[in-house]
Length: 159
Image 1: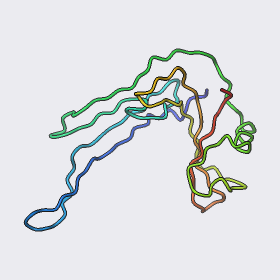
Image 2: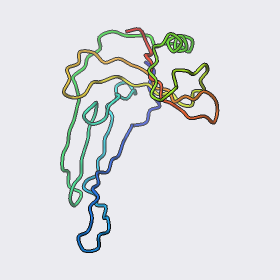
Image 3: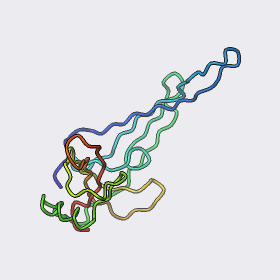
Image 4: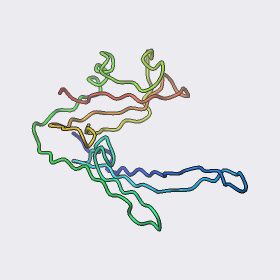
């Protein structure tokens, strides 16, 4: 696999609650916690999940103190080297229905315009056993420029 873009993938989250003040009857939004999640990487390629799906999740609570720290870092060892698909093989995989589309009506696309492409390793949730990880790509694509994009997930090598 070729390395990804080299950047560490970091996600941030905010957990909030909205309540109604008894006296003023106004809605008040309060921040309960903030989260930071880092993807695990191997050879420059991120794992698909963050925190409980392939990396580290840190939740901060009162006064910025760490409320919880969760890590999923399975022990993995090289099993076999795979050759990633080239451009034509990816196109063939999409045409043969191996791409999974996230979005309504996307399966009816005759043509697509790809605006971004990222490589990931698949990793199951922390509670599920897993013997192997494998690479795949995600593409942000639209039927033509200016139209709404969908996310397409596709294998990037023979399993």
